[in-house]
Length: 194
Image 1 (spheres, helix red, strand yellow):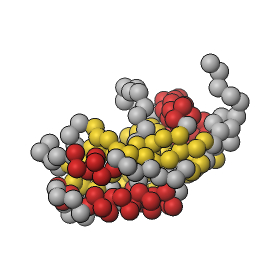
Image 2 (spheres, one colour; image 1 turned 180 degrees about the vertical axis):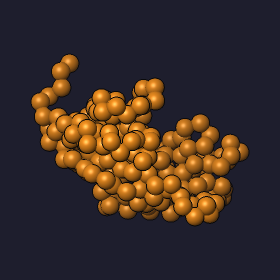
Image 3 (tube, one colour; image 1 turned 90 degrees about the horizontal axis):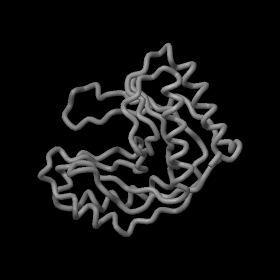
Image 4 (tube, one colour; image 1 turned 135 degrees about the vertical axis):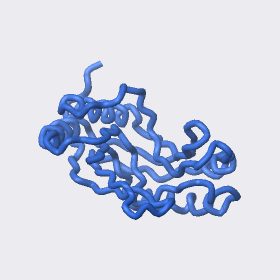
């Protein structure tokens, strides 16, 4: 099964973002982007890829431990950016040090559980909004539309394990469906060592 560890923004914060995304949908060129659906909007901490079911019990124990060691922390969705010429996202502000630490812990939990992880890269907090089908799409108008976006503060209080179910129908443009398999409260263990 295809899995990732994530922080899921609360519905109220996703509703704020949806108002901005609705405006972006009206911009010229918006139909050349494949937009994420509101239920699929999340902050990926660690992409685990295909995970054998036999690894799940150990993975759950280790992710629970990572959550137990991490305190809840404030975040807000803010602004926008892009990766290359194809991925459009909104950024994250708040306690990014704790968010990065939680991402590192989720990555380590997966590795120690036997999940074969890709090469470790620096964590860049973001929430993907859309992907361009080609490099020819000009993302600048969409970035301008996100420029002043500042969502309200919320408390990240849970580490979630999410399953990505690929599209089933084969209809072009169909999106994966995301299913939250488990979640663990961020309980704020001992402060991290320098």
